[in-house]
Image (cartoon, rainbow, N blue to C red; front, side, top):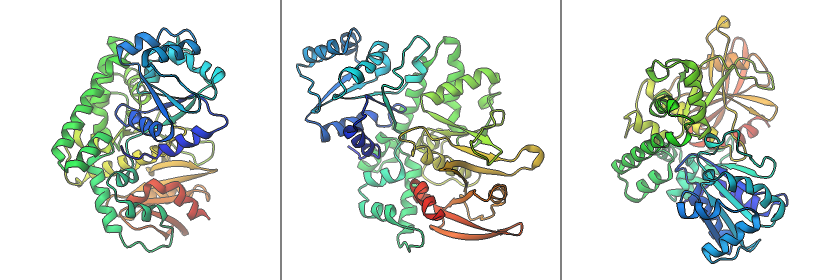
Length: 443
């Protein structure tokens, strides 16, 4: 089993004095079940796993009337006793049972010493107003496709990974070419664990394509599970079919993916698919003042679940495609990497754009870092002009300008409109460390 970043968070949760039942959120096939099993096997004497997609288990546990009744059913069904402190109780696909979801609040109140982890792929899309979510009585963690660092760990590139984790601003790094080659490989394969495992085991990209095709088909088949009516299916299917084709670029709800569908229906469909974590809408901002207020009427930027799926759906395979697709692809992989940093809460990711009557300046990404904003330009080629980034920085001296490219880690000086700017240059292969490197830069 692969090591995942979220395991560190699981260990903190295990020993926390204010621990509550944990719900792990993530799209299907990003590795939720595997990493929870691995954590359980390595940190507990016993793991009791309930999968509510299995009909025999759903029938038994959906009828539980209390926590004690639930635990009694475990004892009879599995012939195991749940021992607080020694047992990890893992309830998979919890979205299949409204009753079990509502029982979580009572686990928190009545069995606080018992470690309970649940997982679900379609939670928010399936939940309607009749569901009672145990707000304040559960914790949440989020899991995404594998990051580049997780990919290196899976490939057992341990020495290189440790070097990348420890390099500091101003350090010489001798293995940039090796890191670039592996990052390009990661871009092609993507971070879906099954695809990564297959490629590591046999190096056959045709097998990777087969796996990605199967995953894409499964996401389309899932539509009926998070559709509230048959009428909505065509809008949801449009999003799942065409969303990856728009990855890294701006889009509008109206006539989404070349359809004739109206803005209202497509907007609801995009938001539903976002809830099941297949995509992220990156909203526009035109101000650098905090708190950030998104401009909901402006076009959004599409970040799809995984760069490997994006390549597969766009028929882009073994090479870094040139031209417009290359630009979009690099924005996709950077956006995906930034989002994957949100293990505790989902990352608020934006792009910055001037109002139309003020010009056409646009910065690829914008995130809040402490009490400051970070403007991020993604440069896939050798072009170093960053007029839009400096235009953004010119609006507020506290803006932190960052360029992500194939260049090395360094601080650069630029002159723009009579001002000198210090800019943090981060190579693509270090994007996983962006918050930490920003801290080094501002100190």
